[in-house]
Image 1 (cartoon, helix red, strand yellow):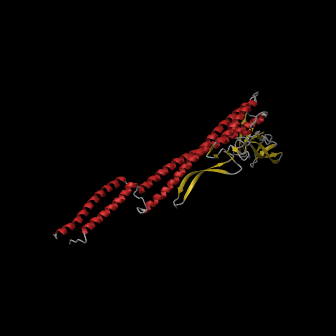
Image 2 (cartoon, rainbow, N blue to C red):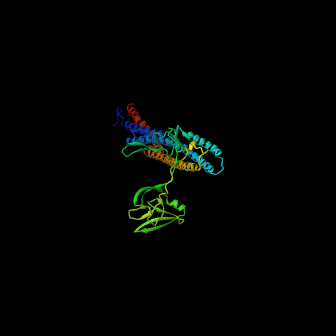
Image 3 (cartoon, rainbow, N blue to C red):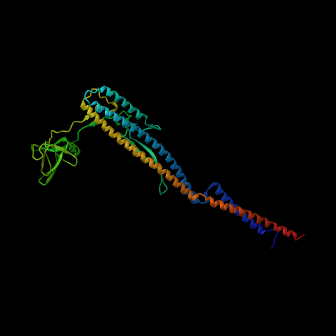
Length: 397
């Protein structure tokens, strides 16, 4: 049936054209934005995931910036500590030179004073963004933190992980509180290692503190190590030149003995009833404090014993500084590794988001071309359907 009121063919052609136009709008939006999922209406699940991961990537970008700032702080502290170590080495060398007879200690002291001033300058200058890790108020607990990562757990909770570095008496050069607790402003005490034994003197037991030696000490004395078994109990002995004898009293300590085979009047008594003659007169050296801290060293007029103690104190400080530099180096290495990981993680998340929401431009361009062709055909079809009314008009002529 042909009707001038209802053009079924035109309606069908118009519906097809509308559908094609809608498809073209969608395809053109993908082509212009590059996104297959540009809004929640396109795919709610993918859009939600992509939005969350984009926010996480922004947080990771902030973490990467924080790591760069932290690395700069650590590098600054390490550079300062490394320079300070070299200066303390020079001070130690000057002190050793001062032990030689006939040297002018005043001249050496002038050089040491310049080196001390250099240490102060290094510690004060080792600051980045207002933070100085080489001098601090050690009267309060201070911990420096570097943002290391942003973590999203399985339950959806988020957290920021940090790398902590506590400023202590073992890694700070100068104590700004005035408490003189820093490596360079505290006093190092030097003393001989000792051990307390239960000694039997004329049948009466009493504690006695005697000098203790290690295996390394005895090896340095070219000791010959032997064993002596009495009553089923084996004792480890050390003979130095056939005149000095030492007996092992625990896992690490040896003491000088008078007569390792007799019972003697002064003897170490063990539970098995075996006696060792112990030289209780061989007491440990009294603690000898360095005359002053490294920052206040003055060798003019000091005794050789005090100078030796001062050298030992400087060497102990140098050991602490080396350990602190090693810690800073380890933290620096960890930060570098974390920076590399965060960069890779950011790239991985970007790739994952792209797989979910990015449009395939090859596919979309092909679809757009096909839709353009379909649109032209739909327009032509609509034109034909609309011209059918003119055929009816000719019937009334």
